[in-house]
Amino acid sequence: MPGDSSKVNINSGGAEKNTYDAIVIGSGISGGWAAKELCEKGLKTLVLERGRNVEHNKDYPTATKDPWELKHRGRITKETHEQNPLITKAAGYGEDNQHFFVNDKDHPYVQEKPFDWIRGYQVGGKSLTWGRATQRWSDFEFTGPQRFGYGWDWPIRYADVAPWYSHVEKFIGICGNKDGIESMPDGEFLPPFDLNVVEQHLKDSFLKNYGNRYLVHARWAHLTKPNQIHLDQGRAQCQARNLCMRGCPFGGYFSSNSSTLPWAAKTGNLTIRPFSVVHSIIYDDKLQKASGVRVIDSVTKETTEYFAKIIFVNGSALNSNLILLNSTSARFPNGLGNDSGILGKYVCFHNYRGWMSGHIDGFEDKYVYGRNPTDTIIANYRNLHKIDTDFVGGFTTFAGAYRERGDGDRCPEQIGAAYKEAMTEAGPWHVYAYVQGETIPKAINHVRLSADKKDQWGIPLLVTSVGYDDNDERLLKDFFTQTEEMLTGAGVKNITHSDSKQAPGLDIHEMGGCRMGNDPNNSMLDKWNALHHCKNVFVTDGACMTSTGNQSPSILYMTLTARAANHAVEELKKGNL
Ligand SMILES: Cc1cc2nc3c(=O)[nH]c(=O)nc-3n(C[C@H](O)[C@H](O)[C@H](O)COP(=O)(O)OP(=O)(O)OC[C@H]3O[C@@H](n4cnc5c(N)ncnc54)[C@H](O)[C@@H]3O)c2cc1C
Image 1: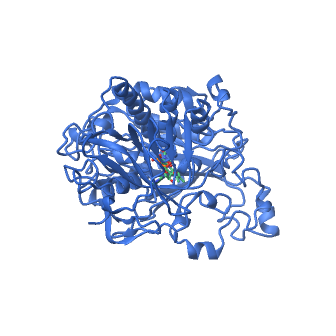
Image 2: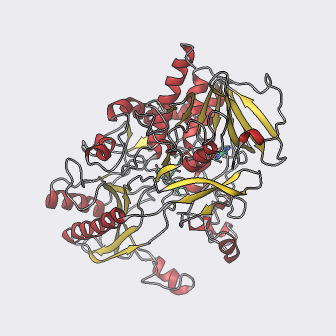
Image 3: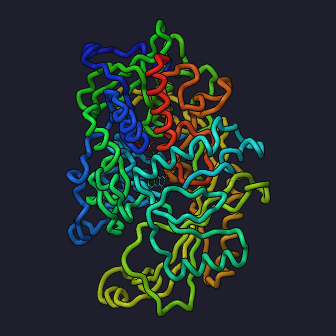
C-alpha cells in the first residue's frame, strides 16, 4: 500500500538517546508556538524541521541591502522564472527573499487540478515571509457553517479561544485599534499605524453611506511600541522599512525565528534538529498511542526514530495531512487516526482572486511620511446574522491608498531620465482593495498520497485535487459590485477590477484535511486538537480547520496551538497521555 510505514528500513539511534518529552514536527508559525509553550512548561522538546537552520539576524543575507546592492535590483531572472514557474508566483517573491522559498524541482507534487502550493522549508517556515495580518475570528465564523448549513460545526466557540488569542497577541505584538466591531473582535493591541488622509476619507464615507461597513486600522504583527515582553525577546520597534520578507534585523514583526524559538531555547529544554524530514508517526499497538516519529535525514537519507509522550504535528496544513496519511499501521491502515476515512478531505483555502483600483481627486496637497508595512481592513459585512446574498460565507477586504510616484501609467519606461523625472514628483492618489473570501469545505476537495510517485526521500508525493465552486464565483461578483459601489460613493474614479483566476493555493492559506469536530465519525480532531483515536497526537496547524472563515488564519493556528499545548501538559501531569 502507498506509504506503508511498516516497510521502512529503520536505522535507529537508540531509544534512550532519542527520547524526549515532546516532539514538534515543523518549526514555522504554529510549530514555534508549540515549542515555546511546551518548553516553558518544562518539557524536553525536540523540534524536527525538514529544512536548513535559519538563525535570527545571522541568516538574513539581504535584510539591510539597498536595491543597487542586489545583482538584479530585486527582480527575478528569466532563468529563475523558467526553472521555478510555480514558486515565483508567490506574493512578494523576489531576488531579495527567494532563499526563503522552496525550489520547484526539489519538492514536486501532483496537481490533479491546478493548485499552487507555496512552501518555505527552513527553520521558521513561512513565518519569515508571511504578510502578518492578524484579525481575530468572531462567533459569526465559528457558527456560520452550521447555522447556514454549508459545513460542519466547530467543537469550539469564540469564548474558548478568546483568552488564548490574548495570550498570543501579548507575546508576539499586534498593532491595531479597538474598534468594537462585532464581526472582528478587538484584541490586545499596540498602537496602530495611522490611516492616511484618503484612508480616513474612505472610512468616513463608508460609515456615512452604509452605517455598518467599517474600514479600520491594520491589525498586523508589528511592534509599533514594544512592551517589556518584546524587549525581553531581544526585539525592537518596527522601523517601518517594509522589507519584512527578507527577515527583520530588529525583530520588528513576528517570526518564529525572532520570537518563539529563541524564547523556547532560553529555557534549556529545546532541541532543534534541522534537515530532518518526518516520514511518519509511529503507532504502538500495545500502548494504543503514538510512541514517536520516523525521520529521514534530508542530506544523508539515513532513517532515525525519535520517541516522546506527546507529538505536535505542525508541518503546515498539507504537509501535516501528508505525514498523517503516510503514518500507516495495522491499527490505522489508512493513515493515523483515520477511522472516519475523512483524512485529507475537506481541504479549503481563501478566495484571493479579486483586485480593484482607482484614483481619487481632492487630496493633492496632502502627503504621507515614511513607509507603512500594513493594509487597512474593511471588516466582513456579509451573511452575518442572516444570509443576505446569493452565496454563503463572508469576505474581508484589504484596502489602502498611496500617492503614485513614477508608476507604470505615467511612466511606462522604468529606467532613464524620464523615469527619474517622474520619481521626483508625487502623482495622484491611488486607491486599491482586494478580497479574502471564505470558501466552502467539500469532501471532493482533497489531498491523497500518490500510489506510484515518490520524492527523493522515498516518501509518496502528495496529490492535490482542489478547485473553486459556484459559491466562490458569486462571492467574487459581490465583492466587485459592493466595492465598486462603496468606492464610487467615496468619490473614487477610473475604477478597474481584475479577476486573477489564480489557482487555489496561491492565497497561501491552505486549510483542512484533518478537521476538528465533536463527532469522531465525521472529524479527525477533538476540541483540544487531539486525534480522536490517538489522543497523544495534536494537530494544530491549518490542517485542523473545520471551515475557513474570512479572517487571516495564522493567528488562530498560534492560538489553538497554545491552547492545545497547555491542555496536553495538563493531561500529561494527570497521567492521561
Ligand atoms: C507571502 C505570504 C503572505 C502571507 N500572509 C499571511 C497573512 O497576512 N496572515 C496570515 O494569517 N497568514 C499569512 N500567510 C500564511 C502563513 O504564512 C501560514 O498560514 C503559516 O505560516 C502557517 O503556519 P504553519 O506552522 O502551519 O506552517 P509553516 O510556517 O509553513 O511551517 C511549517 C514548517 O514545517 C516544516 N515541515 C513540513 N513538512 C515537514 C516534515 N515532513 N518534516 C519536518 N518538517 C516539516 C516546514 O519546512 C516548515 O518550516 C502568508 C504566507 C505567505 C508566504
